[in-house]
Length: 170
Ligand SMILES: Nc1ncnc2c1ncn2[C@@H]1O[C@H](COP(=O)(O)OP(=O)(O)O)[C@@H](O)[C@H]1O
Ligand SMILES: [Mg+2]
Image (tube, rainbow, N blue to C red; front, top):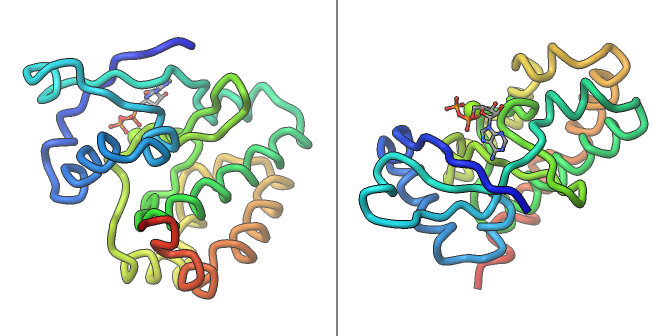
């Protein structure tokens, strides 16, 4: 597996990102959903971290056929639901530039500065279908846009949020 060094100035900037950093260090499943970030030493931790090197989703989508792209979008939605089970969520939904694909085709949220731990915030994003306003959605082909829109409205629902939120936390 390859690793890459990421800049993490923003990680020091908000309560949620500080909490995310602590969370990944204490929970191996959460860590794997976020590309197994680690912080080799104290100085390093303030500015950089090391994370799995992934194929960014925009690159993957550009280089793949429709059927694979539909699968990968499904995996992104599954990833979001998995994070809900751990009590956090992507709140930016620019999935093609904040997620990547690993060597076994898992989708991983590498930009975990962009998460929230507030269920009410997620609820609002769902109610507004916030993802439809984002560049990642707009940059999809027309066919993938239709697919994604439908998939998101079926899967990222208030009902599923209520059903899943924090269920994987002991
Ligand atoms: N783990 C990673 N593997 C591969 N590419 C990455 C990884 N982390 C970031 N990148 C690349 O760097 C870009 C910016 O990274 P990101 O973490 O989203 O920071 P920011 O949004 O603050 O610029 C991504 O869109 C992606 O192209
Ligand atoms: Mg980003």
